[in-house]
Structure formats: structure tokens, C-alpha cells
Figure 1 (cartoon, rainbow over the protein chains, first blue to last red):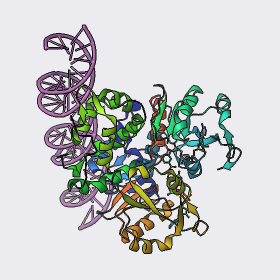
Figure 2 (cartoon, rainbow over the protein chains, first blue to last red):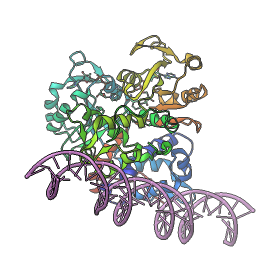
Figure 3 (spheres, chains in turn orange, blue, purple, red):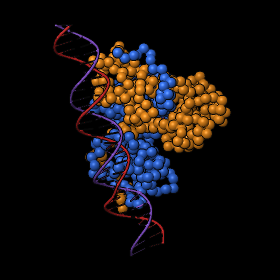
Figure 4 (tube, rainbow over the protein chains, first blue to last red):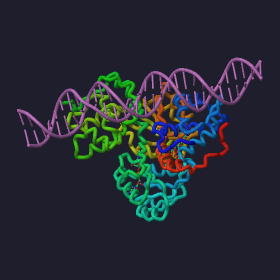
Length: 226
Length: 226
DNA sequence: TAAATATTGTTAAAAAAATAACATATCCTA
DNA sequence: TAGGATATGTTATTTTTTTAACAATATTTA
Ligand SMILES: NC(=O)c1ccc[n+]([C@@H]2O[C@H](COP(=O)([O-])OP(=O)(O)OC[C@H]3O[C@@H](n4cnc5c(N)ncnc54)[C@H](O)[C@@H]3O)[C@@H](O)[C@H]2O)c1
Ligand SMILES: NC(=O)c1ccc[n+]([C@@H]2O[C@H](COP(=O)([O-])OP(=O)(O)OC[C@H]3O[C@@H](n4cnc5c(N)ncnc54)[C@H](O)[C@@H]3O)[C@@H](O)[C@H]2O)c1
């Protein structure tokens, strides 16, 4: 792998989780090889695009055979950094926070959940997924004593920015935020704003288009131009 | 709005939820207008791109002033179909299903949750968000008697495809799936696979790149080429 | 009211991404 | 072992997307 990966194009990066998902599934089948054509059928991307994407990272295929499913899967894990152990904490053990804590999707991606924090006294002390929920007031103390690579932010919108500020002040450099509000951080901190409702938006747009084209929509609500 | 919206380019569509999110926030400030330059600062897209995106749908701006925040927000709601009432059901009232049911993110997007189904007898009959959880065995019956536009799928991976098949057979034309496995449906059915862990993947990739470039990664696990 | 300023909508140019094409290599069969 | 079949990796072409530039127009200021 000779390529400088500092700058994986976003567009390629956005397809990696899709490849990952399909390879994970394929790995459990009795096949050992998969062709770019088959992957195209599964993913909806063209076979040409898939070969191009993969060739960005190296030469993984075998002519007239295709790609070794297991090896390609491992390579994608390396590219995405899943084989590297990272520590993560969760702030906000409400509905979504608990769902995420139990789900363990983070484990296969190389993250170990090391602490969970909340503000609600009724939650503090409860155990979810083998971790006792800590008081948010212990956050700074915990972070000063434990190296943590990233934080999951599942507090209510109103608390999101303030909590992010605290995390940043305490040295956190990567935040996975589920708050429905955009949060601001210094340039050296990574933030991924996970818009959970994005799929719902897309469905709505697609379901809506036939209506729009039939002009069934009244568009005016005293916002005329000029 | 004269443009045929059947084919909003995916790339534009993918930015609409971001505009929506920021406008929602701006709407609560004391500003009434916002310029493409300000939106650029907030969203990270270039001002030029923002003007181009918006001009795809119509002429919403006011020269030397910018965009009326409220009107633009409403226009985006119309484009995304949020002002149109849709009915949705939820299948799988586990951790994630319940979080979604309580969250109400669907309400502002024009969806009304009309029923929740699960398989677990311990859950059936419980009330979440004013809805009594029904038995999944009542699904077909319910759908034959009630018009439903879409379904949220939050059952375990193993049950995802089978459940999707049942939904399709019962006439559902749009599925918002959280299962971590790709599901197959006929061409006339819309599916949005919500990869919740995508943000975690992106964080991992970005956190990993300095390491990769320092070649700290051992890449071989008996997958050499040839 | 005229000049300076601001900001859109659109056109032109540049850059990026996707597709198509194909040369090359490997496999399989007869 | 020769010849057909298969499927990669890469190059060339096309298409899409983004950026840059700017003319047009409204607003603000002096
Ligand atoms: N639940 C969903 O399906 C969903 C979907 C999209 C987005 N979100 C977003 O995710 C976030 C959490 O949603 P939820 O449904 O879990 O809400 P929730 O109310 O169930 O949970 C929020 C938790 O955060 C805790 N909290 C509040 N302030 C805190 C603080 N300052 N420090 C630490 N903990 C604090 C609360 O005690 C609570 O336990 C919200 O921002 C929401 O908009 C949720
Ligand atoms: N929880 C998360 O954070 C998270 C993240 C990403 C993806 N997911 C995916 O979302 C899905 C649900 O996750 P979860 O954490 O809520 O799991 P969960 O086990 O808490 O909930 C699943 C629910 O589905 C019900 N169920 C099972 N089979 C069913 C069937 N045939 N018909 C109807 N209901 C059925 C179960 O009784 C249970 O209540 C899974 O596919 C998971 O991979 C979850």
C-alpha cells in the first residue's frame, strides 16, 4: 500500500461502509471469491467504479477469479482502521444512548466502550452493558486519568453544544454526535454529526416526487418573491 | 417551480437535510435573513454551491439581502415533502425501535406513527408513546385495514429480510431499515438503509490516517497476492 | 439622488467522478 | 498445451459536480 491515505476522497470513503457491510454478509456464505460484477449487483455501484475504488488502495483482486472475500474484508477493515484498538465513552444514557451501548456495533469497528455518563440521578449507578453509569460531574476527572480516543454524544439538543465544549476542553479529539443540532468545535477536533433521520428525509423526498410533478402542492404561504 | 423534480440529483438531495437542520436552528435566532456566505460558514459548503443548489428548485433569494430564513425553511420542507402527511408503522420495539418511537423526529417530517409491532410476548400490550405494541402476527390484518405509507424496520438482522418480505407482500412501498444487513426488495419498493454506524466508520478512518501514513500498520495476515 | 456596497442567479471554466474500453493475466477445458 | 473464457487493473472518454466570475439588481449611505 504505497498510496498516501491522508486524503481518501470523501466519495470513496462513503462507499467503504457499504462494501464492508456486503463483504461481512458474503463472508458468511460458502463463497470464497466475489467479482466486481457481483458486488455491483449487490451494492448498486457499477463494477467499473468498484474496481476503481479498490485500486485506489492497492491490488487486491485475482484475474479471472475476482476478490478473495475474506482478504478484501480484512483490507477494508485496515483501511477504515477497525483493526486498531480505540477507547470511546458515551455521554447521555437515555433511549438512544442505551440502544447504542447495548448494540455493540462499535466493537467490530475497534472501539471499546470504557465509560458511560449521564446527568440524571435516577440513571447514575445503573449498569448497562456491564458499565455503571457515572455522573457527568465526574467527566473531567475521568478524562484526566484515562486516555480516551472518542466520545459518543447522545444528550438532548439543548445540552449538546455545552457538553461538546466540555469534552473538547477535557482533551477529546473526536466526537460522534447524534444531537439534531450542528455543534461547533475547534479545527483540530473531528466531529461526525450522525443525522439519524436522513433516511426518513430521503424516503419522504422520493415518496413526494410524483405528487410534486402533478403539482398537487400549494406552494404559497405568503412568501412570494419581491 | 417549473423544474421536473422526478430526478433531483442525489448529491443535491443529500445536502437538503443539512440546509434543513441549519435553517431550523437559524429560525430560532433573531435573524430574518441569511446570505449564502453565512450558510457556507455554517454548513461547510461553498456559497457558490449553495446558491446553485437552491436555484435548482427556484428563485428564493433577495438581492443584496440574502434568503428569508423562514420562507427558505418552508420551501425546503415542501421540496422534501415534509408538509405532506404520511402514515408510518414501526416493526421491532426493542432498544432502537423504542428510542425512535419516543424521539418524534418523524413528526416534524410529516410522518404519523400509527402502529408498533413486535414478536416478543413480553412487549406486546405495552404502551410506548401512546401506542400499544401489537403482535407481529397482526401485521397483515392491520395493513389490509389501514393505509400505511412506510415502515420503520428495527428488528434483529436475522429477521430483517423475512420481515421486509412480509411488509412488501402486504403492500408496503417504502421501508426505512436499520438492520445492519442489506435487504432485497422488488424494484417498485423504496428502501433506505440507515447505516447508523457510518459516523463511527468515518471517525475511525480519519483517526487512523496518521497511523497508516506512518506505516504503523502490519498489513499481512496471509493474504499476499498471487 | 448618486455612488458605494452587498448579494443574488447564472454563465463559463475547472475539477472530480463515473463509465466505458481494453490490454493483460489467469483459469479452465478439451 | 493451445484456445476460449473470465475478470482484473488501468487508461481514455464522458458526465457530473464544483468553483470562479460576473452581470444584474436591490439596498444603504452620503
Ligand atoms: N432517540 C432517537 O431516535 C433519536 C433520533 C435522532 C436524534 N436523536 C438525538 O439524540 C439525542 C438523545 O436522544 P434520546 O432519545 O436518547 O433522548 P433521551 O432524553 O432519552 O436521553 C438523553 C439523556 O441525556 C441525559 N442528559 C441530559 N443532559 C445531560 C448532560 N448535560 N450531561 C449528561 N447527560 C445529560 C438525560 O438525562 C438523558 O438520559 C437527542 O439530541 C436527540 O435529538 C435521538
Ligand atoms: N441499537 C442500536 O444502536 C443499533 C445500531 C445500528 C443498527 N441497529 C440495528 O437495529 C436493529 C434493532 O436493534 P436493537 O438494538 O433495537 O435490537 P433489540 O434486540 O433491542 O430489538 C429488536 C426487537 O425486534 C423484535 N423482533 C425480533 N424478531 C421480530 C420479528 N420477526 N417481528 C417483529 N419483531 C421482532 C424483538 O422482540 C426486539 O424487541 C438490529 O438489526 C440492529 O442491528 C441497532
